[in-house]
Length: 243
Image (cartoon, rainbow, N blue to C red):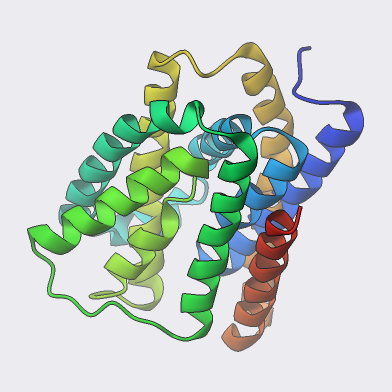
């Protein structure tokens, strides 16, 4: 089997995937924000981005019975279409960029998003084409950068949905975004056998993390797992920025 990195590197990637899955299980998002900066310390940013997209694609329908019926597809689909177009437009440019610069850019993106979340920033909007295009463009560019397309979608949907409805919209959006992003990467021949084999090893760890996170979310008060995830995101972003 052809894998990315040594057995030690693969073990660290699996551990990060498990922790990222737990973050997603608790909040419905945040996995890529954990994976991108830490993966970039172990492998190149382009390879990290491909792995993140693949793992999210494979697991995008996990637990679909509990959320698919709550998704507002009329709001989710247009945003996903814009994001996919911007992912395709950004992918080639990012692939040829300097790896260290890309790692620091990923770290800065994670820290900015985490800071906005901790400050309680909310995007109040009434929908329409302008917020959809803005959020979709940002989500698509960040997806190409390192699978980080979730935060713009979170702030977009947070303008008109809360609680289970918000989580369902995010999960439905991720299913569309990451499956289509995988198809784009495949057409550009950026997915190798090594990527597929490595993603096959990381996916079970990610799924196990999601299961743990979902169980923890039922036992912990929302403020506690919000603090845990925020601390995790800050730590991963700072670590990637300082190396």
